[in-house]
Image (cartoon, rainbow, N blue to C red; front, side):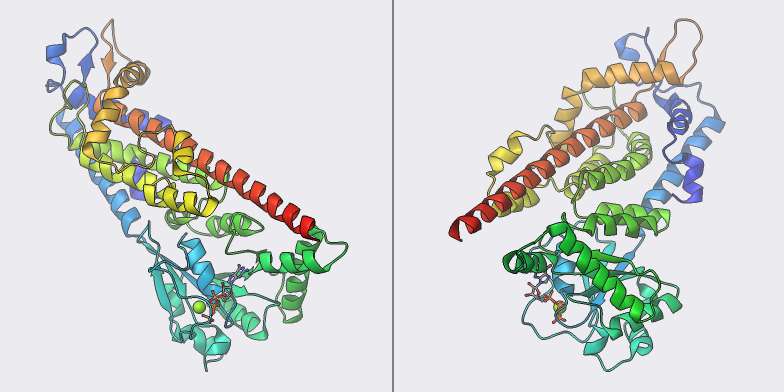
Amino acid sequence: MPSEADEVGEDKDEADEDKLAPRFLGNHVLSADAPPKHRHQQNDTMSAKDSEMIADAVLKSKKYLEDFKNIQLNIAITGECGAGKSTFVNAFREIDCKDDEAAPTGEVETTMKAMPYPHPKLPNVTLWDLPGVGTTKFPADKYLKHVKFEQFDFFIIVSADRFSENDAKLAKEIMKMGKRFYFVRSKIDHNLRDAERSQRDYNKENKLQQIRKSCIQGLEAQGMTSPRVFLVSSFDLHLYDFPALQDIMERELDTLKRDVLILALPNVSVSTINKKKEVFRSQIKYYALLSAAVAIAPIPGLSVGVDIGILVILLTTYVLVLGLDLKTLLKLSTTSNIPLADIMAGCKCLCSGKEINAGLIIAMLGSLSLMISAAVLEEGSRLIPVLGCLIAATVSFTSIMFFLRFVLDSLCDDATYVLKKFKTNFQESSKQMVENAQGEN
Ligand SMILES: Nc1nc2c(ncn2[C@@H]2O[C@H](COP(=O)(O)OP(=O)(O)OP(=O)(O)O)[C@@H](O)[C@H]2O)c(=O)[nH]1
Ligand SMILES: [Mg+2]
């Protein structure tokens, strides 16, 4: 998080949210003893210092969210002709190679210039499909200038076989330029399938180890020290080393870019979903503050003043990033042959598979109002040490925080459920395919 925003609230430090709430909610303080008609009355006792502090906190929240929206992450994918670069670009963006927005793959003329492919769900993330060094007339150092290497945050060098001399030269040049790179050995599914068909003593783990070792030795022979090679199938990113690649890419970025990368990652594991949840959770205080700060009127029947527009945008982002939008669920249903109704039946959150609009959010706030009130009272009494029997219950800010945390938790549970269902189905159909093949022999 940026240092200025840290003044609003330190990351993952709930005590900090506690500090924010009572002052901010001076504007919305509600006494437990007060008759309902007094709710939402302006608190006349809010001092000028408090108002200043609130305005400052709102400004810093806005700045943090603006910075997050504007930060650009550019990932370059390079490698020899036919290595599987474009297929990897599509898989990373969770786009089918047959889709209109897909990078062209297969028997196509290799493009000689870097092609940008924006992430469909996070427009500030771009994957660049670069021509391989060997397919251009440039040597590795000139190639990097040609593709304007400064714009990339890191490089992924793809090979469908042992890495070439050009790949190793390029890696050394990238290192000289102070940038990071990762070697991806692609089409692993293809190698495993071949080995399974042709080797009597076939063992999947041994075969993977053998491929990894061969790539590492090949790169060492070209002068690379301790090269990191990740075995990937772009058709099944959740298998092999892609989750490990995700972890390392993310660990080696600075905080803001790391958070953007995490949100852009394909949902290949429960750990990815949990990391997304952490990123979203750490931002809730900023959205809650803004939503409560610009609230004009309370929602009828609820003790909550909310800017619904902010919540619509935020929940739409949660749903998209967690892969719970209708388009993604439909695609999953088609590829896995699991009926959409079966997938939806296990989803508990009202937002999953739905278009998020003000009506849906108001209905959800309504259905959660009792829980929100209880949480607000509990939070309020914990947050605000009050005198006598007067219990100040924080309203908008705490309510929105509770609401967003609740919805985020439910959506992450749904995303986990969908992922597990998809993986179980994938394992069962793979097992079935093996049994069928054995039956034919
Ligand atoms: N089985 C399998 N095939 C793959 C994989 N990745 C790519 N392919 C296939 O390999 C062929 C080439 O893939 P592309 O993604 O077009 O390769 P490229 O590096 O972009 O090729 P150029 O742009 O021509 O340099 C296509 O037929 C892909 O379907 C993979 O992980 N597994
Ligand atoms: Mg290509």
